Image (cartoon, rainbow, N blue to C red; front, side, top):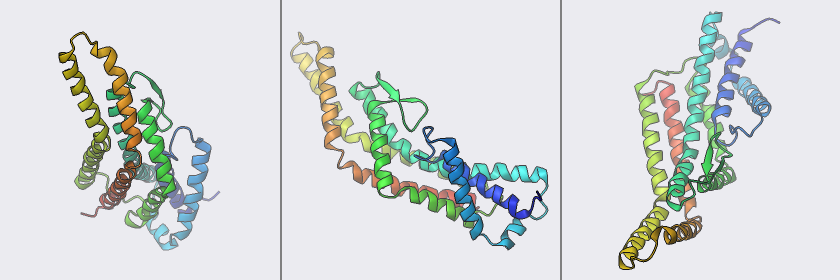
Length: 262
């Protein structure tokens, strides 16, 4: 088989698409078969390859050697990983909020296998992840990731990603900070209720020294925590919409940074 510039360009496209799918939320979970991910990446790469002009392909593959082609494969893989990891970080917000609540409610001792991560997670952490994943798919949030993938080939030509960029690293840092703040805000109402509960128990233990606050406090904290989690589930939709908007902005900034746009 003759190795043509068209085939080399398709391999680069396939590697970028596969890196995005492998690191993206929901579809990149370990529970999804690897064969399905590879097949989906191959299908999307075919669609993208058909939209690229032959002139652009020949220009990007002109004078490519074996060594330089391997370097291009690494660049494309890192480009796809950067796009997928930003989207996955948005999902980590809900898990971060759930872990905070697990620590306060008392569920941190009971961990189960998380459907989104390879490591075990708390009960509320998994609950928030599943709720956000269902909402994310219901509002077609995965289209934002696919749109960012398609736009990346217009903003970042094959093999031309600017990985060593101060603006890119600053974008990741700012996205991480904003996502952590949103995670705290996501869990803040329940955390406040649990804090007031603990203060009330401390006052009650001073007023009634005979009361064993450790025996009484655990079921009360559990009851208050679950009650407020259930109460704020409808209001969590607004927070989830803010997370989705932040993810879309972060994806746009990452694409600009990888494309070398100041």
